[in-house]
Image (cartoon, rainbow, N blue to C red; front, side, top):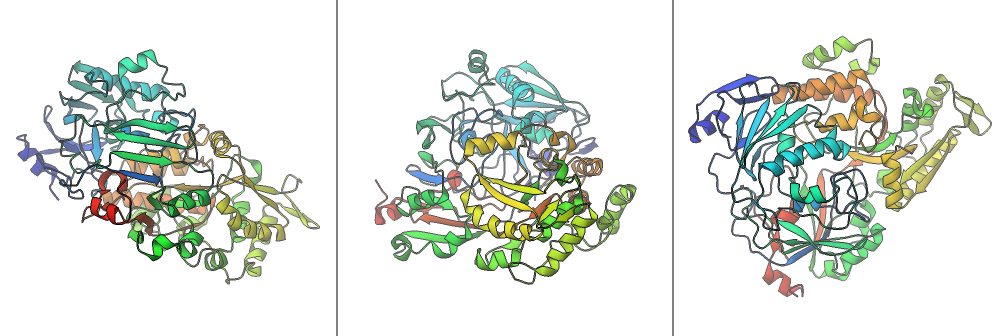
Length: 619
């Protein structure tokens, strides 16, 4: 690793570091650096030629047709009705971010480091509260208009005012922006910002001020916006597909943060209301790459001719990212889920071992932590350092926090573990629930009922056996499948009992965790705090983690936070797989050394024309 001190020397600046509130930054005003990271280290020195995980000589051309495994903001993998992806309103197609440039971009082989794209360098004030981004003079939008500091300042403040809540809420400690000249913009923070917030701002999309002076940013629209990124919206059919076409004269194509990326001429996203329909499209070669998330299909579905003759490849690629927490989340805004004993009892009724063996073919591992597959996961009893953070809250948290980290129960392998169901019944009784024949009444005297809300029919086969166990406790449970638009709407308004959600963090915790578990987000429509967690102890530990001055301190704070969240029983943990399960038509090339923290197929792979020709995919 190259230290910040070395980088400053390489940039011809003073070789010194200064600890300031919020971020470790260069000491002297006027120092210009080419990269930023939360804890001060960067792998790549000034003047680097390209990231190690790309092939700078990668062939260009061809297309990839795929179903994205992830999405952000208001994006929807099953349909779309707008191209405005950075607001709450509407459903946008995944990967719209490919159309927009940002001030800096992530290096995917480092935990959080960012390097210049629109910004060729950054200057940081002595107090760490002002960041001046120096823009590249050649930056331009797709309509050939120049991208200037006016556009940057406008975009950041527009997102703070009207952006999706995941953006606007994160930007609370951003005070203002100032245009210093055509190529320099200052971004000012309150002094209360976290170390991560300047990096978050550096990763925001930059819009054309002229375009959004004429068009209302707050409205959904199917008119593709003017943007400046490596792709633009091409051919599309609403709700069916969208093609992102490569911008041939992309202004940044020779920059070190871009070299080796964006090798496909066309990146096409296809939409299917049901997973099986999407899988059939893959079998026919309409979809050429997909990540598989259905264990049954992975175990039994890949027996079609193209797999047997080698035209389709199946592969497990290690996923080094924190796995996060996939779970059924209880909506604790509802009275029936207020008592943690009720929530814990409901979790005891889920027979994971039977589910994994019978339904999942043994492919999964049970989740226990909000930080699975990472060093931030709490294990065993709290360490001395964790106790130092937890002791001030001893009277405000469950006793479990100071014992072995809570883990889901291990059943006897049967569909209905009677011992665990007896424990569940006992907890429900302690919480004031009463049995009336086959019906369990809640503390309010009304029958306790639960609706599992989902948009994916694949979960039905998992929920129904779980619901049978809940009925043994006297709880009427059902599975409600709704269309994607209705699901999105109900989730935005927190109109559900229980729903499946996977929440993930990066290797470095960022302001986004406030949106996952913070009290303010609990009442903010569109936030990812599905459970409605509103706990001052959780809030305090979130701030401690975000204010950590070293990665070790952040990890300790995350473990303490993990203990408190797990002891709240806000969710029934589901499962995870530490590998990407991918299948693709054997027509692609890829770099020899993949990045540690992601699987950027659509941005770093390419079409291998010889391979494609062999399998008839060169048309």
